[in-house]
Length: 403
Image (cartoon, rainbow, N blue to C red; front, top):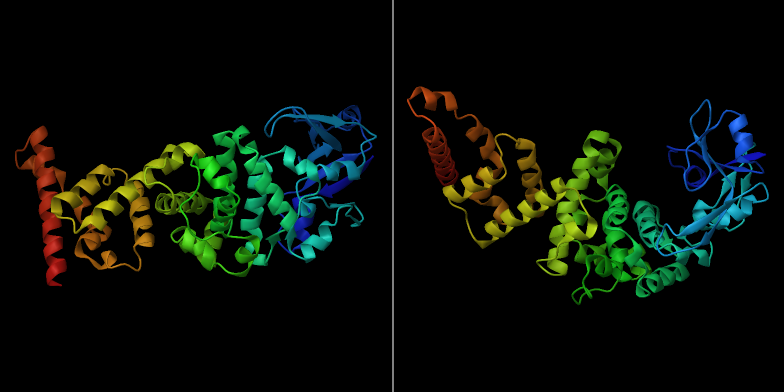
């Protein structure tokens, strides 16, 4: 029995990146031997075990044979005669098909080390096309390693496009698409993920549209050489890419979901400009309700602001729609997204937008108890509270005009 570190841990170590998780493959063993050694079985579809001390995952070397459609239609074979090379052959990319033994010796039967050195994302074998999920995975790896100068090998890029043309992506569930998309949102350059999918037709297929509007047509070479063509397609999303803000947010567990939420909102703005205005992105990607609501409200306020300056009553309605006093964090997601989108526009300088950005604290400070003490009752309390809020907005608008 021999044990090897495989996959992302070896890849990231060779790239000089921090290694978060270690995966191990066991060659020449049976499930019974691992059970006898104290390992705990956790795999339902294939033999994976938890180490008795470290709880790390150890998988028996296996091969896979296509038995149905989609990314779940596989029959796994695991036995002591399955070699390390057999196991590595089933993996998606050569950079993920490198193993290392306990002495630190590398096993690289498919050229993964050279592809790391040459910054290439290349599929291991034609078995790649049996799993449509790999189209999204390669695009996600591209977004993750774009900063390091990686590109997708031409033959892999072509194979991905052929898989899309064959209709293979129809086998993917919306939930699984969202899982990959969520991971892509936590890469340094998520716009690269979507630009890659757009170029091979996968984005249109996932969104259920025939094709994007005519515009720039990307290639792997243009993506690797410049972000100009990407920013033309995703001008809002790219605003939260790279830089210290995104890197720090990705590292901070508390900030990661906020980053995902904001990036999703910006993606929706870009997609509705690029495809159809009524495109239902939430349904296509099966996003959580919180994200859907934030995107819809952000775009709604954006349309209202674009049509012209909002009066006090319209501004109050924005605060009310977002339940801003009881759920200020919900309103701030919309507001922060609008500030990113409108950062360089004239709208950002307008007094109505300034009131939206600064007014919540003022409106929240209005004392309901004083209204009750003044003799107002039942529905009158709510009506008087809204009246005072509207007056406060009118004062802020006047002060902005005079100031």
